[in-house]
Length: 289
Image (cartoon, rainbow, N blue to C red; front, side, top):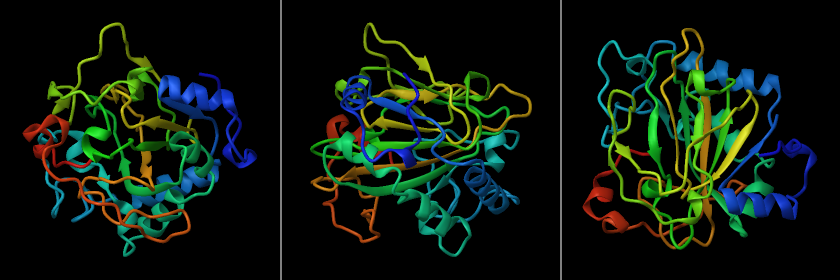
């Protein structure tokens, strides 16, 4: 896809960009964040993680269970650098106010509003470290986890490092956003740290994304995407990721609490109940994405 101008220079998307996003399910936007902003994000998270997993923040600690996540051997790079879940809720740490500020950054708003065709609200933040040697994440769809109805969710994926196939950059499956949520099978635990895997629909293929630090990839919650292992010897592939849902949603997974408007006020969205379209399998996928 063609690179777009920085968000700070745009008040809205063009009709072509909107059509492109709805057709393909993703939109890369180049150099949204300055080198200074990216350094702030990277250095703040690395400092908090300097001694390894943080209780109640890093996956696998506190109430952040590993349902849907493969186990980490002591030699696994992810045992020291597991992903951090909902850092915006941790205002006792430096990453809390930082994550909240970027999650509600007004530069995101026109892209999210155009993608939903209505007001977006924020429901999740995550930070992935993905050090050298780390496994990837098998092909999946975000709305399998968020369970938004009647529409879907959207992600804003901030590249904190240059991300390409060598260090486990994202791949996407263009057009898969126009299909339904596919009930997953079991992923290869040698290559994926998560346990769910979605087969690609006939005629579709994975396309690698090539992002520079400061770029943002927006994508639809039904888009099939994932990443390969980080095969580099020295390069991290860090990313700060946010998820958003339409304000008018009538259902959302209970894990994603306190939906927040861009003015900082919270709203209520009814909690999803039951097993979703994938039944017991989906109910058991308690690990947040």
